[in-house]
Figure 1: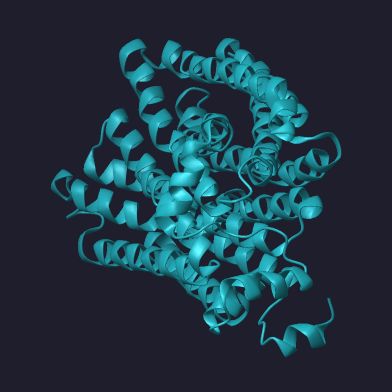
Figure 2: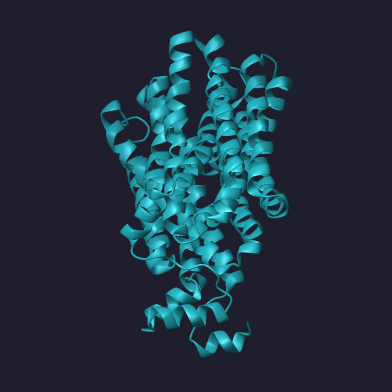
Length: 436
């Protein structure tokens, strides 16, 4: 549809701008959490935290970043994405400002274990940046036709997910040059800048803008179809959550995303500790190895989205979770650096492709409640980022570092097997869904 048609109906933005805006919002929100994860060692040393406390600390942003996806993504079905995204970015800014205040007032000499609950709360707020993911997924899905959603969603999530990897590379130099306080000030400035860019170009798809202009629902749908929009929400926030929750395939997709993206989040938080403590790598090397994992999984997600468009989400997911299983098996037995690096690489490839495959299937299986389904899948699925690190910390605490670090990856063996079984279930029942 021409630019004149968009102007005629007072439609702001377009698919390309919406994709850019959503990607920037997610990118800067996720970057803030990368800072928190890497600097957890500073807080650990200053407060004398044990492995379980450290695991909970790095998992706290994952808690908010997962659970808040559910209501905020469903909110997209009534708003289009603008208000939910801006609300989450603002909460993340508040969290980082609180961490700056804590560092100024207490770090390092006055920072003690009594401030641990406050640190958890600020980590929770900072994690709101991760919750922007499902908002952006739903926002982009409404803007793009279904035959291009694999590519669009893969590009959005792949580029956005680059944030932890890129900034983990930059963090050692930033911390060395600017100190802990300077790094937090710089990262907060980046978050504010990204938020301002979203304010300028981030708007919901045509249907939502038309409704906001007072156009009746049915007329808005007709005009939006003429402008290229193909999917539409079923109703209110509660209705879209209920509709998607009644679809059993939503819960299968939740389980798959728990392994692919929840597992990805967990490893971005856990790998710095794994490489430092088990392989005795320097802090900078551990950060670079974690960044490599994050960037690899993010970039391959773009290709995974295109692959899903060509061969289908289910076949792509089979390839992905088979890779996760293989990589986890290698990590369990890996005692040498080269073997562990190979295992990390294979897991990263599998998780990135799996993330793309899951969200290719969401609009197909739940087309009338994309926001609600994205909320359940992205929210509860990402909850793996909160659940897995403390479990891996428990392995280390109970078995000791020599056994605990490699054997902790048995968690991913179990998740990989379960995921493959669920993908088979979707594949075997797909023909019934299409004929229903």
